[in-house]
Amino acid sequence: MNIAVVGGGRRCKDFMDVIQRHTFLEIHPRIVAVADIRPDAPGLVAAMEKGLFITSSYDDFFDRDDIDLIVELTGSMDIYNDILAKKKKNVRAIADRTAQLFWEISRVSTMQKKTDQELREVRALYSMALNDLIQEEVLVIDHRFRIIDTNDAFLEKFGLTRDQVIGQFCYRITHHLENPCSGEDHPCPLIQTLESEKPSQTTHIHLDRDGRKIYYSISTYPLFEDGDVIGAVELSRDITKDINVQKVMMQQEKLASVGRLSAGVAHEINNPLTTILTTAMLIQEDLDPNDPTYEEMSVIADEALRCRKIVTNLLNFARQTQPDKKNANLNEIIAACISLTQKQAAFKDVSVVYDPSDNLPRTLVDKGQIEQAMINLIINAVETTPAGGSISVSTQLSARQGFVDIVVSDTGEGIPENQLNKIFDPFFTTKENGTGLGLAITHGIIEQHGGTIEAASKVGAGTTFTITIPGEKIASHAS
Ligand SMILES: Nc1ncnc2c1ncn2[C@@H]1O[C@H](COP(=O)(O)OP(=O)(O)O)[C@@H](O)[C@H]1O
Ligand SMILES: [Mg+2]
Image 1 (tube, rainbow, N blue to C red):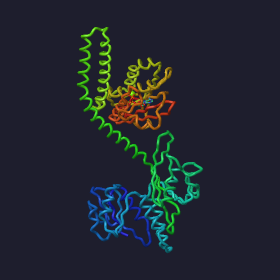
Image 2: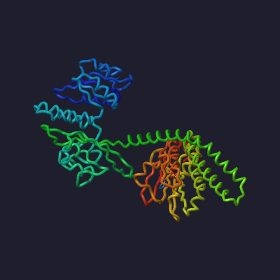
Image 3: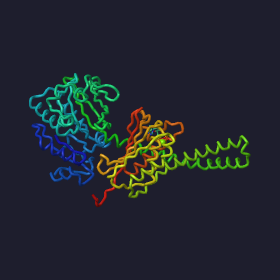
Image 4: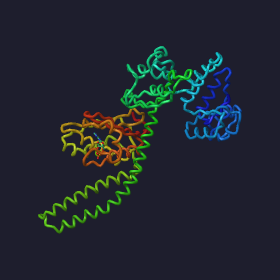
């Protein structure tokens, strides 16, 4: 079996090593060609040293008749689809998604009756795939949810031995449940696969020790014997990073487009607003203060002023100016914000408790912007806290190396789970007079500082916002 590899990165190199290490008796897989656009890709270089066919374009593979299998290792669906479209009929192609590779192998292994020799080959291939090629956690499960096989990645993740896992119910091992998984957060893709006899995919959300969400992508592939589904292969992968990246990107896109839109609208509105305001004031000047119209003119002027404030906010938000970062003492900036908001807090009989850490690294920040971000958070906290309550603000070294955490906690009404992912959206507000811009602006500012902002909340118990921003490395440490 001659294999051509598309993508000459690390995985290609690993793949070559694995194939060389294993002997497959009669199958004799051999890598004969590698394609990569980067001439210095490690797999490509290794292939060149071995005297294999190398090329910058995988299009060259399609003219050759010594290739049986094309393995796509770049991870790009577009490339894989392109290969599928261009390859000859008798050439097989598999994608980087190791799941598929594994499936192909297990499918071959159960397709027809085999001689002992063939069975041995398949087993060798199977064990190589299970433990060397697949970084995902794998379970092979029968139709009664009993675990038939697993791999090292899985055992390591759960800290269990083979003996503790084989023969057990999958839901007991992975979820400590007495019945198969179900419900919105933990749908069971296995049931789906057993019923439909087709691959299935779902995402589970678990909480880690710190209560942070971990997203698992779980795929199941049916296993056939004599044409019947006898179980499934289940692969799980931690996709938290991918999801978080996606969320951040979506948020940025949304902010950018809303920003452009509102900049335009705000400009248009500003001029007529000024006219309304000045006209109302001019009319008022000619009126006797006892005239009932005088009071009405005041209402018009006040409301126009309020609109102008919203428009100014919008323009601020839309401008998203690059921060002018300077070496600054974060604790002092925050202390200033707390005294700035003291009046609002005192007015509501809410106290603000400040607990700055005295071993923070210095930070490079735009003072004005950080102030704005902090004031937004503190005002939100004050608004939700009942009279007599208190808000706590603190700074500390972050669990993330080299970063600083700013934490604002309140004991207010909290944010319902289904709103938590909306609060940073521009214009999302639950307040009668809210603009829904405070958190959107804050989010933008923190992002511009290379940091993150997260909210954790429990309805009825309160909300905690955690800002994490990079600290400045101090060249010579005094202590
Ligand atoms: N500390 C908090 N406690 C509860 N809900 C909050 C808190 N901070 C923000 N929110 C929610 O997020 C929404 C958006 O906040 P924000 O962007 O500051 O806009 P606004 O304060 O004008 O409504 C608020 O309307 C509220 O529903
Ligand atoms: Mg607000």
